[in-house]
Each structure stands twice: as structure tokens, then as C-alpha cells.
Amino acid sequence: MSAPTDDPANDARWWRRAVFYQVYPRSFCDTDGDGVGDLDGVTAHLDHLEYLGVEAIWLDPVMVSPMVDHGYDVADPRDVDPLFGGMAALDRLLDAAHARGIRVTMDLVPNHTSSAHPWFSAALAAGPGSAERARYIFRDGRGPGGSEPPNNWPSVFGGPAWTRVTEPDGRPGQWYLHLFDAAQPDLNWDNPEVFEDLEQTLRFWLDRGVDGFRIDVAHGMTKAPGLPDMAVTDTRLLADLDDDPRFNNESVHEVHRFIRRVLDDYPGTVAVGEVWVYDNVQFAAYLRHDELHLGFNFRLVRAEFDAAEIRDAIDNSLAAVALEGATPTWTLSNHDVDREVTRYGGGAVGLARARAMALVMFALPGAVFVYNGAELGLPNVELPDEALQDPVWERSGHTERGRDGCQVPMPWCGDAPPFGFSSSPDTWLPMPPQWAELTVQRQRADPGSMLNFYRRAVAIRRDRAEFADADFGWLETPPDTLGFRRGSLTCLLNAGSRPLPLPAGEVLLASSDVTDGQLPPDAAVWLVAP
Ligand code: GLC
Image (tube, rainbow, N blue to C red; front, top):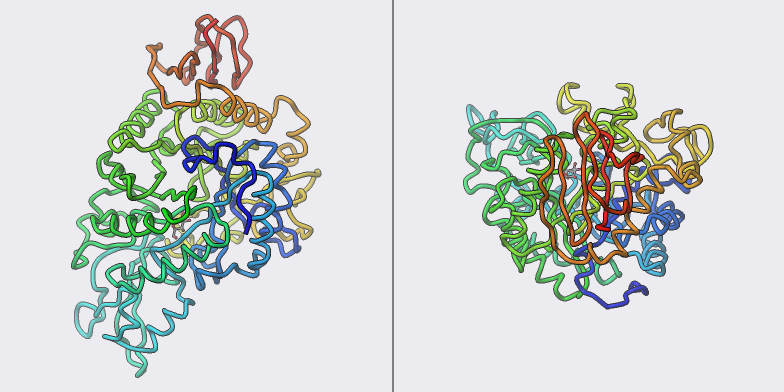
């Protein structure tokens, strides 16, 4: 397939200061009227991405899947699901995006497959001790008749991480490990066949012209030797225990070195890992020169709208990558966490804060990821119980509502749902009528909109020399505020309740109106020295 045409310096490390745009394909745009977004919907709206000025797309998984976890349960890693338009639709998107100079990276799910993957059916049919079972993590149970799970690990989605199978002779038999849903059996990364298969998958997409991958659960894959019981069982979604034997085991780095060797055959490609690891030294290990190019550091996502917390998150994220001379990677949200407008308080205050934090994020050195809808200031949606689809809702016994609220489809145009997202009123998640004010169409026409604010921030970041290198320094500012400089540019954030007097300088961009030389609360500004 085609390569990007807009590749001026032919810079193989283009991703070091790129703005990536995360497309959640189910929720982006539906062109075939089934109420679920598809790849032709992404192609149809590339003008939106170009308007925003982003360099690359991260596509959540589009491989063949029963969609129990919306594509993170992959039944064929080397084909596109018909729901998203099949392989031809991906080729169309690659061609159209590359023609506009936009790169396309895809999600890759190496920790587990779908239970509908042919390997898993073969494992069930072949029985204990077989080579087929050795591709997954099957164990005998504990207790009388093996009726208890092999260890006490919980699934990230709630309930036990083990499910018992019925053996080919009809008797209750072994258990298999699934850190997520029971329909997502974990692969056995001690098995060379699993490596070989991943290499085939990587080359399959890279040969087709894909520019890289977002690696799902990049801190997962290998498990603590002997599968010891967990000391603490915290079943929260994406809980962050660095000593959790389910995640962040030393041998996972062998998988990343393997992936990197393949990517190095395709200059200009990139791997960004989902790394839920907090210790800076352990986090940095994923970014060694022969492992991932980029790693999501989720400290900023987890920080409250509090100057000290935000500064601490930035400090630690920078310190972690500095250990390996790697590139920082920033995001305020993704398809797994509440949208930032909601996290920062919701309503007008949440929106103002999300706008301010976007300015902080775009001023930081490194790569930035924008989750679709963040540029519109979309909030989370309170969905009725009957609309919920995340497996977390069922597996937690209806105690955790899951992630559907941040995955509601994009409003494009018009005054009523489905706002140009689909020709069907029956969208896979219902869209709130109040989003009439937030459509792309409305926001493009409004110079003060979140969309046009994002667009200006991305353009200034791309065009100004201050953003070109890693130069960064903190400034002394009053309590509840923070400030840093990049060359002659200053970024100030007011997270307090009183206006912040601004130093002399030209306002390049502000998230709220700056009057009488004062930055109001819940706002940020970019200034350049006079
Ligand atoms: C990652 C994905 C999440 C998915 C899980 C299991 O955390 O971001 O959406 O459910 O992995 O694949």
C-alpha cells in the first residue's frame, strides 16, 4: 500500500513530537447504517483530522472479533471485521490518510485472544497436556476434584481470572486464565509459537502500509513464574499495584525486544505501549532503546485538577523517560477512563478546566494523544442500565458501570441524535439530545469553540520553534498555580480560585478571556516574552 506523501524530512522518528488522534471506530462514524461506526466513516471524516492538524491516527482494534470487549477480543488477528468494513475498507483508509500525510497506527492485542480464536477451540478439543493447550494458560484446579481456581487472581473486569472448562470426555476439567473477560483467554508467552504468530501479525499489517501499533496491555503478557497467589486482591478496573504478579514481570521485556526487532525492519514505524506501571525506573525499562518507542504514562490522567498533583505528574513522567533518554507521551483521556470534562467537575467548570489542561498538555515536550471527542469537549454520558454494554458491568455484578459513558458516538452535525453519526436512530449507545450544541458543524462555525481552540493550539505547537526541542523548566508561581517555560514561551495554569496576575508578554493563546493582565481561575495561557 501507499506511504505518506507528506514526509518532508523523511524523519523516521516523526512521532517524537507528533499529535496522535485516537479513533474509537465504533463511535466515530457509521456509513452502513447499522448504528456502529466503521472504517469508511473514518475515511469520510479525514477532513476533520486535517482541520485539527493531527499527524497520526491510533485506531482501536478493528480485527475480526465477536466484540465481547468491543474488539479487544480478537478471533483473527490478520483480518478486519466485516462490522468495520473488512480489509478493503482499511486499505481505503490507509490510502486516503496517507494521501493527506496522516499516518495510521493500529491497536494490537498480544496479551490474549478471543475465545472464538481457532487456537482456543483447538485447545478445548485437544485436552490437557496437549500442544494446543500450551498456547494458553491452562492449569488443574485446587481443592477436592480440582474444583477451586488454580490461584486467587481476580479478573481486571471483576470476578475470578479463571474459568473451568468441560473436557472432551464431558467431565469438568482444567481452568484457563483470563485477566479480562472469560471470552479473552490469556496467551502463554513461554511458548515460541506465540512469538512466531505475533511476528506474522506484525508483518502482515506493516506490509500493508500500517505505520505502527498501540500495544494493548503492554505491561501484561508474561505472568509471575509459578503463578503465585496475590497478596492483595484489588479488583478495581486497571488497578495499579506495581507488585501485582499478573502484570509487569521481567520477562515481558523479551516480548518488547522481539516486537522492536520486527519494527526495525520497517523504518519510520512506531510502537506505543499501554503501560500501567508507576515506578519510574520500572516504567522507563519499557522505553529502553530496543523496546517500545513510546509508552503511555497515565499519571496525568490520574491527577485531579490540582496544581501540585499536576506538577507532580508532569515531573514524574519527565523523570521516568529521562532515565532512558526516551520521549514523553501525554494524554488526558482514552476509551477506558472518564472524559476529562467530567473528571474535572463537569459542566462549564469541567469544560474550562479541560480546555486549560489541553493547553498545558500541548505545551509539554513529546508526543500527545487526543481521544476522539476531547476536541469537542464532550463529557461522559450517564447511560441507563439497559444501555450498558461493557463486560465490566456484568462481571462486577452491576457494581461498576464500566466504560460506555466515555464511548458514546461523535456528534457531527444537525440538531438531534444521531447528529450525522449514523443514518439509523438506533446507535449502539444512545446519544444525548443536549449534544446539539457540541457538534463538529456548530463548533467549526464558532471561533470560540473548543474545536477551534484545539486547532489553534495544535497549529501553534507545530509551527513555533519553542516546541521543537525538549527544553523545559519550571517557574516559581503562587500556590494553586503552575508555570513552566519552553524557550521564550511560558505556560501558566491557574488551578486556584483567585485571578493570577500575568507577567509581561504577548498572549499567544489563552483557554479563557484574559482581561486586565489577569488569568482567571480554571484557565491557562501561553505567553511569549515581549
Ligand atoms: C486495555 C484496553 C481496554 C481493554 C483491555 C483488554 O486496557 O485499553 O479497552 O478492555 O486492554 O484488552
